[in-house]
Image (tube, each protein chain N blue to C red):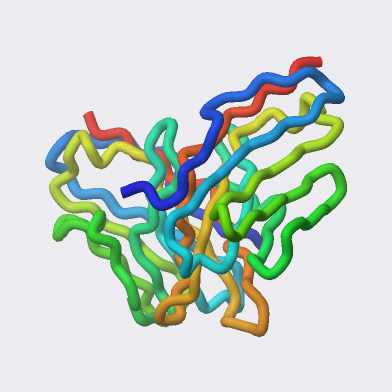
Length: 114
Length: 116
């Protein structure tokens, strides 16, 4: 049972373009939605996160759009750069017994061509 | 370096052998998580510690897997009688004590296990 579905599996954009990655979740108890960036050989690193009480959050070139009624959220990377080439994971979590275990999507491999 | 560290970074073993991985979380982080990541997939939750107490275990954690966090500091993950299906990246993450907001989980670089 995959609780967080992510698309596309891979994405190629030109430098300066907009990268868009989409995720959908099933469990309405989720209340925290982070995006992680992972480079080869490294662990995931938090990029940006959102709570469901807001519809959008922006940090620099990265924006999360959140649609609670549709149970969907997306990551937009503006002015994409070759250094953004990495695998991106959406995730969701809720507090349960003190644990905030993350449920991850399958990831999107982003390639930004120079 | 004050980040999460894991040791070893790579481990190659033969089927049937036991292996043990170590995770050193960020100092003062009392919450520690183990995840497993297979090729082309996102990390999957294995187990959670708050201080030294193991409070949650995934169904993915079979009887061959055991995790400890003595004294609430570093943690170890042991896999007994390894199988080829255990080949994966094992990630450790830590986060501080629960606060008013949601706390970031800081991931280590992972231990890549290959079972031959």
